[in-house]
Length: 340
Image (cartoon, rainbow, N blue to C red; front, side):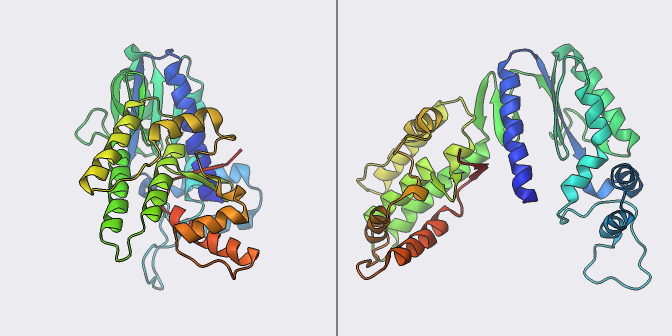
């Protein structure tokens, strides 16, 4: 539940950043990254803030023990409790980190003519370009006051960057440049590799099934609705406005069809984008597996999975269908907001 909640915040933040960039109100940006964030969080500071918000001493004690226990495979009697650092594996790690930075967040959100965003240790600020150095220096000082170090802006690490809003920069999975919003290059390459693997699996399959190849490929292109979630690359990166990326992906598939000498008619990324943007709840181009009839389920099971369904009850058909769909969509990117 906490993981889902954090992902919803990311999705919401992406939309807000996109809107603010498109508003043309800001000419500069500040992207700062905290060095070694979780291991350098001071326990005394967290506990001080928690005590202001939580009156139950047992909860405070529980949290203190959770963050103070030495993080080694075998603890020994006499091991000293740590007074610094929050284990990243805790379910409450992100919440504690947010509490630790609450005062800074409140102060920076009150800055005039500034758009401030932070996700965990990744800070992004939009402002007038003439002010980027002054504002970034002020932010760095505020973090130093709570013993946190920011990577040097425009330094060798590349993790903290100051620049003009029309220059290229990455934030929360997107690449922004001159008004164009694209997925990061690594995300595009990962998608391309996954498409190649679909063709390769078909090439080396003992029993080749062209219907299954086309179905898998279309699923990778369009995504789908399953268990009331929007799943797939296109849903996840719907915030893009660089359509050249989509045309290039369609050309990539055409190239693979020629390379593997396969004659099929797959769906297209470009049309998928427009269907989701403008006909999300009416389109039949994007499969909504939640709305499939028993007849449609049988058709998929027979044509794609070569399953004999004549003797199966409706409940058995539904079970076999959902089991196979679950397996096929498990590695699709998921827009964690409900399909609504």
